[in-house]
Length: 277
Image: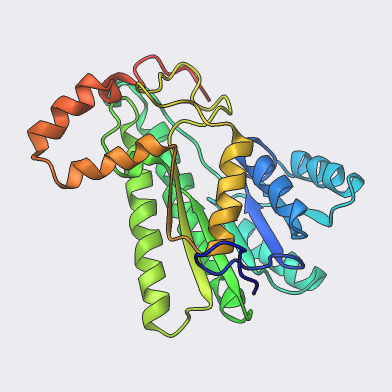
């Protein structure tokens, strides 16, 4: 472990560590893989689309990075077990687990099919917990390990027209923070947990959504760079951009007062015209 030249928390050297990224063949997953690879991390691209995962891993390898691919459906227990077995057979266990796979079902709650809502929670919350449960023993056995859960700013505030997405992200944040405290209580301080909570990210997933005033769509690359810095510093919760910090007002203002702010900032209607994927 090295220290930054400036005063602050320790900065870990990630070089040589091995990271698995779910949903690693697209959007934020690709950006995270590239950013971690520049730090010398060996990448495992995990995706339900195993062809896309293999293609992207080959692209990373052609750029001089250590990268492999594995098919992984986070909603399928057998797929998770098979992926872990393949990794253990191929090389040593993971040091970093990035739970990035995610989907969204936008629209008025009653007009979106129940199946779409259930798929959202199955991927974003149940899948996140299932993958973590499978790989946590491997992480505990490493001298220094980390879990990254890609959550959302909607974990802090209501998201009308994205109700099941918000529900899954509130759950993912609660799981992340609870697991972090539990690991510390059990003496496993060597395993860090970071919940990454960005506002809208420009991946196409939220096309049509309107960012509130003073808030911009983040690029996957900017989010990836900030996330890797958070891993190096073992930051528990990462909120981006700075306007996401305003969500803290929800815990100190009367509910009706924050409701007024949410309406004025357009939070209540930001997903009304969503047409993403």
